[in-house]
Length: 239
Image 1 (cartoon, rainbow, N blue to C red):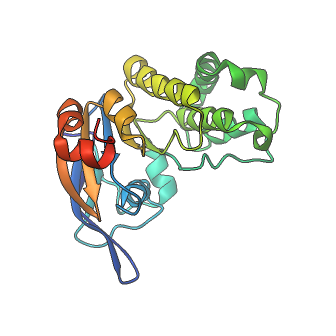
Image 2: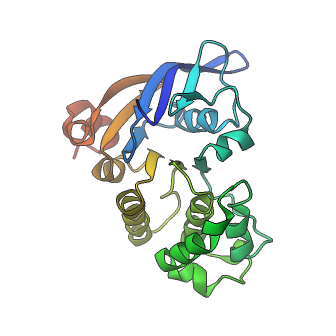
């Protein structure tokens, strides 16, 4: 059984058919990437999984076989599905520490919070240095670290990561992707990654799906997609 399973997912914005029956899986311990152009439906997919968009009848989203599409967003969080959204969305008027504490609001294992906070501060020493600083005064890279740390405080089974490299300098992009790999390797957290930097995403992922205008048009091991002529032409600059 897959950890996360999406089956025949349709999503509409009014009369616009944004997702047209997509199906995908993420297994335990996997990094899976979803690549595609602007407007392909990548963010819509993540928002539907996390419950901020409702899946219509006939669609299914499951975690370990349990149906998520019938749950409210806060209940999806309680199941261990954590969405790190595009644009970071930190609480700008709260401190770094308060943002991290907010990540654990639905957590049942309160005894593990201190341990995970220490882990996050070791993972992102910059956050430890700025633990009392208002989140809105952090740099873009530091806010991305904070958004990831906040997600980790929820003790996730799977992280849904939306454009973690957006607006970051190349050296920070590499650091963020190294961190994603480390989290997956050391803590076994599965990741469903949406990323415009398709080359970087395919380099860290186990498998990938290519989404075009609401449909999955290609799927397979990340190495095969990276070598695919269509993917090279459309998303990798012909590399």
